[in-house]
Amino acid sequence: MKYHVTVGDRVYQVEFDGDQVRVDGRTVVASLTTIPGTPVRHLVLDGRSVTLAAQPLEPGRWAFTSAGEVVEVEVVDERTRHIRALVGPGKSPAAGGTVKAPMPGLVVRVMVEPGQAVAAGAGLVVLEAMKMENELKAPRGGVVEAVAARPGLAVEKGQVLVTLRPE
Image 1: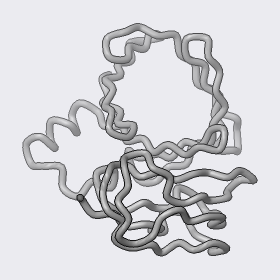
Image 2: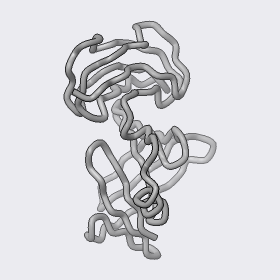
Image 3: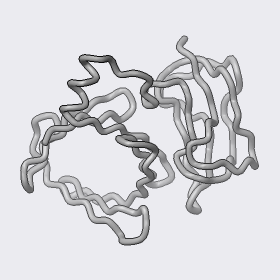
């Protein structure tokens, strides 16, 4: 089965064939173990071990937290990709202008203000969740349109924290 995995501005082609995993045509050794009853996953990729917390955001979208950093990932199968090509992608949250809380938590720090230009990957908000500080980053460059987050604010999963508009 072939998937298109979007991480930030980069799209990877990932193909599963039995025990083999190919990423952009390169075969890698991969193992993913779930710790039952928790969002914690243990990933071994080509001998490199990573422990991460996985939070589903909506169908096909996940937030992964590892070492205090949150990365949003969108996974689209080949069939969905073809349908999107025919009818258009619609409003895709991964391509949208909002940064949402990937999990419930407490806003520790806000690093931007309305009108500020930001580059893709720039830190926007620091959210404390699961006893870790997670820096939420701009999915792409733009101008901060609105900031709903403020230090000390308790937020729920999916709550809009920052709204961006194209430059």
